[in-house]
Length: 162
Image (tube, rainbow, N blue to C red; front, side, top):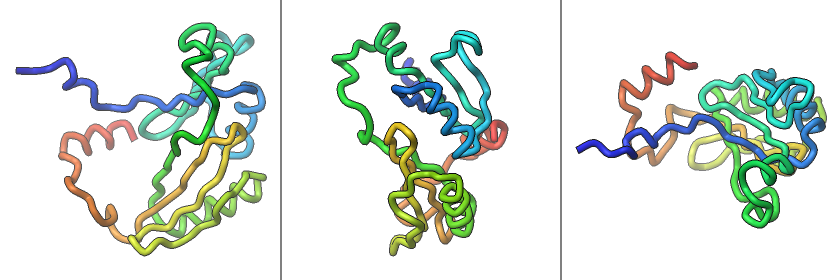
């Protein structure tokens, strides 16, 4: 029998709650080079932004608006460092090249590219609100420890959107 949870299996977006919306939008467009996709409620009164991104959407929502409209301040608690946003790139060389570009743009690098014994290269940086970002690639295939390959329908859906 089908369950409603059968449809609860796809991340649509990752939304970062930010204290300084304008500075955060500027940071993500100018330092990370992301392209704006949406500003809501209107471009002139925006407190929410989405960026063009392959796969899940990255969005920003001004913390004061979140507290007023969706999640009370006492539930949100303190900010940052409860998770990491990881971006997989095609090659280990891309990790280094992206690191170099972001460093040149003034990104706050907390760990330059490092090769891990389990088969990946990664670097780590902080965005303007202190959220941790990882940029990584596997040296070979999908890396060690993979328990199941994506189904062909999952991969076809990803290919359609990507």
